[in-house]
Length: 226
Image (cartoon, rainbow, N blue to C red; front, top):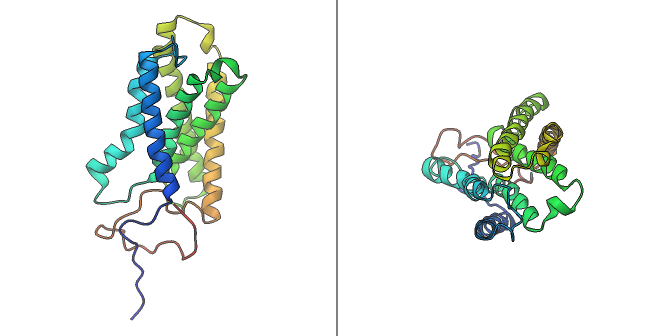
């Protein structure tokens, strides 16, 4: 009889990722509550403190909520994907709290490049299998990254500019869109490289044994992955 290999119901994940995910969510909520109560302390005056206080928790908890309500009996929880989404919200809020946007040259450009890239990488890990081609990864990177960058600029305009009345603060919209798009492409290619070198193969949601596809052969023993 041929030997059968079964994927465990809940594959082991690195505890550090779980701790980081929970800690980032807690710190994000604390920072947002402080900024909402004391906008000047969080350096969010005229920068959409209320919009952030509503939108960022929704973004940070959308994957846990969707997984619990619809997917928990079908797939494992994608801890790495979740922490990547949470960190984009946390780093932006922390950057404002430390006043880095107004005191560090090009910090805003760095955040557009990095955070759009991180979100794109999370989306790729969440929606594409590791066997995807470079072209498929590039297509998904551009589709999501450019859309995300554009959505952020629109939200920034209506949530922040409409309350602050400062026109020149967001005069670099085209530059931000370009940086976000470049970040998404770079992140997508980094994920593809990781897959080709047998990393992050189980970073996305994995099927549980009771559902179709759960008996598919897993990555060969010894291949790392979260």
